Amino acid sequence: MIVGAGPAGLTAAATLAAAGAGRVEVLERDPAPGGVPRHCAHGGFGAALLPWRPLDGPEYARNLADAAVRAGASIRTGVTATGWPAEGPGPAAWEPGRPEERVASPAESLTLDVTGPGGLERITARAVLLATGARERPRSARLVPGARAAGVLTAGELQQSVNLYRMRGDAIGRRAVVVGAGPVAPHAARTLRDAGLEVVARVTEGQPPSTYRRGLTTDRVPVPLLAWTTVTGLVGQGRITGVTVRHRGGRTGTLACDTVVFTDDWIPHHELARAGGVALDPATRGPVADGAFRTSVPGVFAAGNVLRGIESAAVAAREGRDAAYAVLRHLAGAPWPSRTVPLVVEPPLLWVSPNRIDAPLARRPFLLRPAEPLGLPVLVAVQDGRLLLRTRRLTALDPSRSVRIAPHWAHAVDPEGGPVVLRTR
Image (cartoon, rainbow, N blue to C red; front, side, top):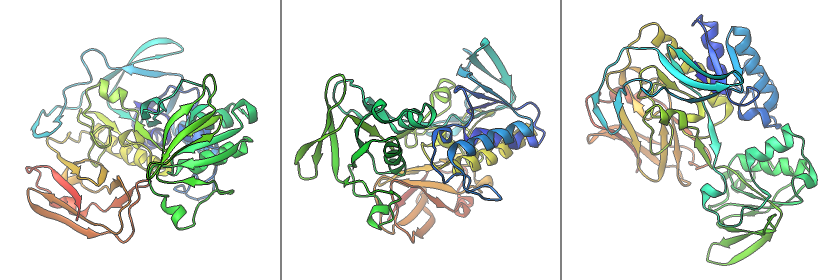
């Protein structure tokens, strides 16, 4: 059973069904499969597919869904997994922070409570893959004060309004400010312009993104970028009339606008994992998982952006495919690991995924994200004072994108040792 019909879930479903894994069912709470790409009208999707051809998000989503159905998977939309039965999905195998304590458990059936057009239902499967993706944090979660006025959107809400519900012009607003400087912000600005709005500015608390610094912005019409600037509040009742900002050095001001779009602040959709007692990683805020996408609960896998927030659709799809192979091995009787070693990062590194190491199966590259720009850092990995990795990055690290770390060094991890610490030097 797969929960979530985004790129990770659909690719996993197609792989599992094509491999003859038995009944493969995908549950999706939205009215159509496809996940975030379904409302991303811009191009750039499908680069991982062969033969490659440029696709926009909706076409990419349709292709993934069609491939899963052709392979024999069943996709049920409008169906929400509400939780696990009271007894939970089963005993946890890994105790967070206490890798030495393990409860070996044979693969058993897993049950989820769901609700959909047919009412309440209880579904039992031999394995569950959590592919629930990530969501944007709204204004309230970012602690930006102000009245609950109209005109405050996340990038996802904006794209759904414009690309799914065909809202234009005054139906959205006239003058907009985009908050954020990550990969989604240019798409939000472009969507606003396509809908007929004037984009007043982009605002970011940090320095300009590396694409701006290198003159590589993809904006068709450059948007004024206010770096080192914080949105401190929203102005207006009923409808916002502006945002207050504070620049570096303490100078303040107000940007007049009737629409503000918050972008590039993602958190994994981990509610179902948390309800099932699946251990979460405090850095990624997603389920802890090893290189085979196995979580702390036997039989429960996790793949895609539920693991750490937003990566590209291509990364999520690739993980869905690889997770399907891991599920197949599990269904064929491969034992759940009796021990994994935590992998943690130290500031200024932000998170690493996967964040558990099962040394014999450490074949999957690690994704690493810094909290701030780092110029050509030396990365080291240490376990119990023993140096496992020392490598200098040949490119700068940027908090808006992850870098891949080859997994060869992880084979030297002592499976009986303490946590592995990844840091810069």
